[in-house]
Amino acid sequence: MSEVVLEGRNIVRDYHVGGGLFGKQKTVHAVKGVSFTLEKGKTLAIVGESGCGKSTLGRILTLIDPQTSGELLIDGKPINIAKDRVTAEMRRKVQIIFQNPYGSLNPRQKIGEVLGEPLLLNTNKTAAERRDLAMQMLVKVGLGPEHYNRYPHMFSGGQRQRIAIARALMLSPSLLVLDEPVSALDLSVQAQVLNLLADLQDEFNLTYVFISHDLSVVRYIADEVMVMYYGEVVEYGTREEVFANPQHSYTKTLFAATPKSDVESIRARLAKKKAA
Amino acid sequence: MALLEIKNLSVGFDTNAGLFMAVQGIDLSVDNREVLAIVGESGSGKSVAMLAVMGLLPKTATVTADSMTFNGHNMLTMTGKQRREIVGRDVAMIFQEPMASLNPCFTVGFQLEEVLRFHMKMDGPTRRKRAIELFKQVGIPAPEERLNSFPHQMSGGQCQRVMIAIAIACNPKLLIADEPTTALDVTIQKQILDLLVSLQVKHGMGLIMITHDMGVVAETADRVIVQYKGRKMEEADVLSLFESPKSPYTRALLSALPENATGDRLSTVADFMKNEAANAGVAP
Picture 1 (tube, chains in turn green, orange):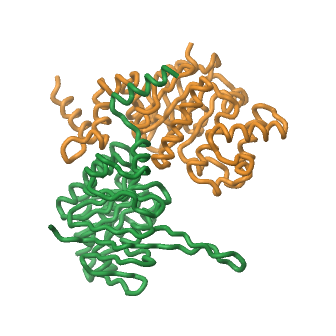
Picture 2: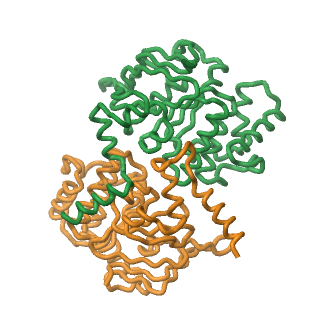
Picture 3: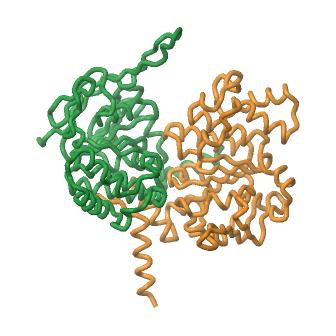
């Protein structure tokens, strides 16, 4: 068995809302006891509808939000950011890529600065070194050194997502959390970004946590699949297990809702419409 | 005669770099009781073509066509006043971002009743009754209370239902849905698509679905137009499009679907375009 990069043991996250002067405080259980393990170089997909807690879990894994209870282990070391200070070394290990490449880049920051900033904050590299590394990274994600001095608005959605991926990779993390990285992109651009992610995974032996609601993408990219529903894990297994034999009724609903584009189902639909 | 018939439609935009042609010579027709899907990537001009029909393009756009008729009216020579009578009543449109297309300052009930007041000249109580009926039709629970909600108090799927209710309020003959489910979850997407198709069958509307999602096309369309860079690449009925796509671009689009992946990498449209260019260079 290969090395376990990420492990969650019964992770819980509650949010307290309301509770003003006279209001009563309410507790929202966003994540209710999630456990999993993920090996190096594998991809875990977290699937669920909006509001099911998949992004909250993603934020806990990237050390943005603390868990209310439960244990999070990265490279075998337990971390709880509510108690301990997060070291630069820890930050370097986990990086995140967000859904909307239009919102996640600062419009007044040149691409070169976007890529150089993680290095500036977390390492002691000189300006010249940072510049070289940023240039190299641009080439790796399929852009060019000529893009170094441009601003985000000069790029298309797919290119921006490449920039976000490049920024996440600047610190050579071992774990990448991808929060719906392709759902804002067109079909053909989506294919390019998915290919890029697969190439990078092979090259750097990266571990991915892939958050998505698109089952056809998950089926293509994931090794393991976790289905969440109202903060709970209702299904967890390898891709083959989950797709071949879904157990929970919610997973079955999800499969039924996914558009089918094979010829037989189109024929069935047209026949049904004619009969109606 | 077709409900909407467009011949040789071109739309150009004046930009600093000269005239940019967003749509180049598109022919299109939709019948009553027909679902036409227009598929293409962003920038393929699929939305612009429909906005031209609705007369919603900015002044910088130049629209030319040999003919553009809707239900016997010539849409090209129409005045703004005549157009406004038809748009919203006989032709209605649903946009991609339901949250952004509703006015955050007014209740959804007010925005729905506005259409009824303007086009159907209904009085207050009749409007209210019709509004409740419409909310029931699109499947919004507790319609009497929901009419007084503001858009931010509703979820994305609910807002899209409100948009659909507004669009079908005057029983339009043609409904244009511009990426109606792109911002929504799969389970909600399924509900919205089922709703649109059932309304289309029930009212015998023509429906134009603009989308980039081949799955949505497969689930809803009767006939499909594939568009790329402002030109029509292929037009076919849905079954033959998926069974035996004629245009190489359509084949490329279909092979970029993750479920059609062979091997560990997806084929992309860019690869296809490169091959195509290389072949064109070699051919005499």
